Length: 75
Image 1 (cartoon, rainbow, N blue to C red):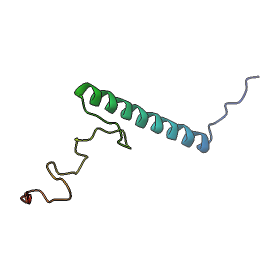
Image 2: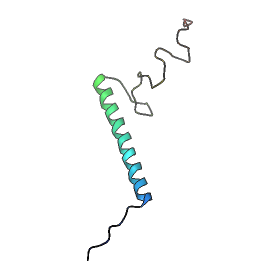
Image 3: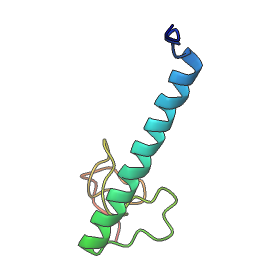
Image 4: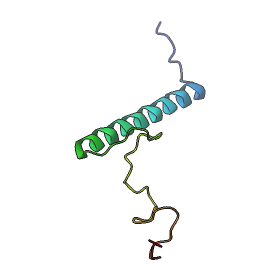
């Protein structure tokens, strides 16, 4: 007599999915640090571990201190 096949609970599947997501995020951060180190960008002190100087998705390049792009600086 063979044992009946037990089905996986939704709770276990959810926990495993969340674990895979956390591992993927951790690996992405690790890869970003390696890439930044290879390019010589300092990521120390950055709470997210992402290289400073790289614009986040949706950010405008060339804007600093809340200035709008295209506005002349007051220097």
